[in-house]
Image (cartoon, rainbow, N blue to C red; front, side, top):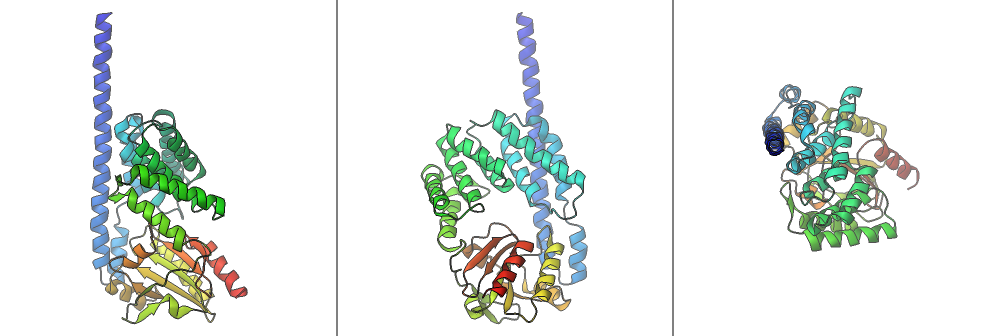
Length: 358
């Protein structure tokens, strides 16, 4: 009996060590990908010709390939609490990758990651004190199952700090569901809880206090039906440009940069939008943190047939609390927000409707 106990402990220790090594390898791959992506982004912004940019674009680190490598190390170790931070980062990665023209195999792979990570969190880690980062990973997933899971974490996790982060996650996801009074009141209560319980927590270099403050700002100034804050800057030619100068026009305001995963599709969508709205009381205004040199190259070859504000330090993006790019606002003739979210068909339909009903 004693020998059996010793063997059980021995193999348990070996298994724990193997799991720990797998998690460490996955985390190493995460850091490797981030480092390569940072270098690639700097190189792309420094490129001075369209040809150089296209060459670099073809050399972009492959997020799907890194996701496969990370997942192969991580999937067997998800029951270990040490896997939670890397698993949450992986959720954010697969949700940030392009969705257009993705093969069924890649889409199935991404879905597998989201479903398995969510299932293990719900089954094994619901009461873990190490769920704060995972809460933000679930926000990145952004579906109803993720919100339900965040609601369970907020109510059932015994750690008050984790409860606060989960509460903020629920408040962030509620933003895209409804703007009625009841939902707004609930969001404010959740944000208040996040500030009280978790203000000091830092995730990906940003404190929960800052994220909560951003949510309060969005509620006050950047929700549907609010007059958008005036946005002032200069275009690539150095000419001043502000939203207040465009009063009387329907405006699509879009935050973007060349480092976006789906940049080619972004250009195509907005080139078509510009053409469709030609001659109408409409303005498409871009805000980008790319260099003026990059913008001049894109304008010279016809890729950017709309005006863009240079926001090299992302000052204006921070003013509008932009968390990811691309992100669009559609403003009516009085600068009132009528749509906010991903650019594309919904933004264009909203703009079309505003043109018909000034």
